Amino acid sequence: MTPEQILALAPDAASATAGKGLANARKWGNLGANESAIWGECQGSGSKPYQAQIDASEPAFKCSCPSRKFPCKHGLGLYLLFAAQKELFKAETAPEWVEKWLESRQNRAEKAVQKAEAKSEKEADPVAIAKRSASREAKVEAGLRELELWGCDLMRNGLASAPAQPYAFWDAMGARLIDAQCPGLARRVRELAGVAAMGRGWQSELLERLGQIHLITEGWKRRDTLNADLVAELRAQIGWTLKEEELDEAGAVEDEWWVVAQRMEEEAALRVIRTFLWGRESKRPALFLQFGHVSQPLSLAFVPLTRLRAKAIFYPGAAPLRAAFRDRGAVSPLDPAACNFATSISAAGATYSHHLAQNPWLDALPVALCSVALLPNEAGWLVRDAEGDEWPVSPCFDREWELLAASGGAPVTLFGEWDGRALRPFHWSCAAEKKP
Image (cartoon, rainbow, N blue to C red; front, side, top):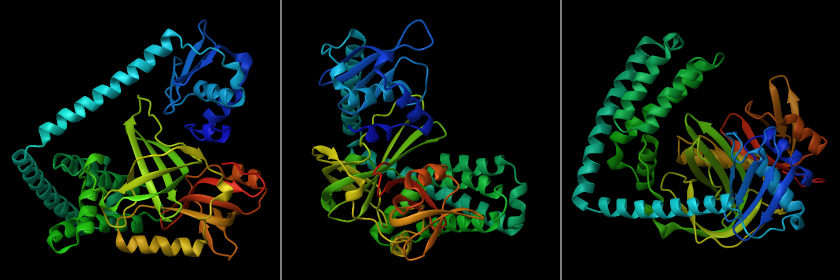
């Protein structure tokens, strides 16, 4: 892996900076590496050095430091040092603490396979499947009826009453939807509390979100008249989950997939990794999701700025984006400057409109913009392309000055997400400096 690819694994900018500072041989001892792992000891403020180790097959990280970030600065520093000076890692026999960690990872993987097989056998009974399905549909129907009444009461009272409502008002309905096995709708209802308290412009945002919820409840009533893709989308919006092994490979897309961006976020007690890929031949985006508890490390399935041959199996739905990947081939580096999928703002907007027409609950669409410049304005920041079209930049993006410094104000190729209102950049490539 290149230093750029390693730094792309950092959970935040502070960890990346600290990791670069630790990529110094004078700060490390007992360095070693073999086909399975990379390890070393870094002297910290305590009497005992921190033991950092990397499973080279993932990569996955573990460190004895108290940080809750994965990877921590020590893991990043160790990996950066290995990428720059492999000759320092002379030991090939892993110490006991590394062997124990690798063995525990292997044992967990084997137990997970056994547990999945046992669960699969238990769930294979067709009679039990039918009973579970009927029971859930009955719960969903009851939950949707309550949600419809709740929404009607809210509208009768008038939207002006919404900001005065305590969080318990929204959370109680969300809890009822959880009981009705509608977690997707529960999330949407709980998010309304933040919308009602967002300040300027909350009225139109709240009305739009309530409209989306109403569209789900009305669509579910008419599911017998809808096509299969739209029904699958409704099920996903309500909260039905589909296991990866249950996906239909009939529509699989085999392609060379470019790993163009990755974003890690924490939602409640969950850590979510969103990896965005682009098919070189199919010219379509794909989203790979990973979930894990915040207290547990997540092994990265994909490394940013790499490419590989694989088969993408998309989850069913209207304008599907999320996918699982099978039959993965060898991984090789990706040069961002060689990517030819970037387009203009108007073309990207037309693509978003096409997807939104197929899926009215679309949150955002990954886009790649060619030759755009970052500019300040009174409301914040915007990007402008060669045709003079402009998009506002999301306030969630906090690396504006870093982008300006890297590009010198010159146009860049920019990858991000467009939600119909603002662009959230993830990664860029400059003409003179091809770095993320």
